[in-house]
Length: 355
Ligand code: PEP
Ligand code: MN
Image (cartoon, rainbow, N blue to C red):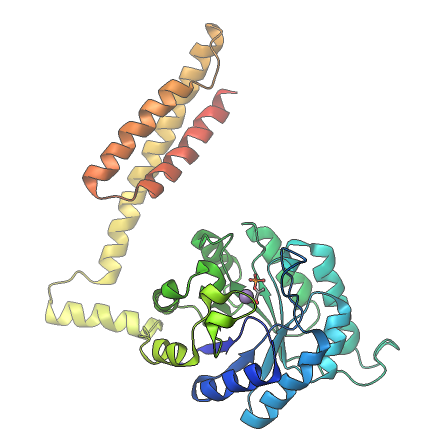
């Protein structure tokens, strides 16, 4: 099972911290990460050490024979990082919210990619092995996809990193990315997704259960004294423990077919996957025809409201329906959030057909 593990501190703080963390992680590293330019919300918090951190990353790369990764937010960052032979670069969630910034980074990469480097690059920056792009801070799958397309145009391999939106996981956004770009490797960043070290282990396992291609996780040799994101960083020992206990599922078609075949031959007490899937398809047919009927009835109600000069939005009625359904959710052990979001979508559609 080849999964990518990108581990390392939120930020490079000192040479000692960078080297100690790498040393303690050595056995588990696929790629070592450390931010040197930190896009922080407040100008009064630690902004990163800047280019002074690049030699520390080079040292890690040489000492532990491991590729290193850092965050870039401008063409100047790209130039400096690639001159220092950083092999992977990532674009953070804040920069990912700005397509002009992402395009400027893509243009910088393209100019390095071209056989004749532009004069800007006087010494030779080395092309990265891949560029990683986080999802934008606000939930917007189209912007994430647009950014991936801008970067893919450079010819450099692109990977996506799902880091949640404002500490909400936003799973649907990542599932939609997977559906529309199935060939783009997708990693989970459990540290920024949760903002809480205690939640990181279960998110890592969830990522494996969902068949993510790897993890980008923040690991610090002394999390309590980290200069940024102290609450969400694991110690190297904790990170190694989490990774060594991950359970991997087999996602090959062969494995899925094998489950069906064994179930059919041994008549074990489990319906084959294919049969369960056709049951789902049948239930979906029923659900969708009921939804179509509901929308048709809403249209008739719309005609009535128009004739009687009644406003389309009836907040009290909507609240009654919602409360009744939430009560139902509780009794039936169905997630209230899921029920609310389905009902909201349905209600919005019924309102819009009445307008
Ligand atoms: C980071 O990975 O250090 C970082 C700043 O992440 P994000 O852009 O996801 O907030
Ligand atoms: Mn961080």
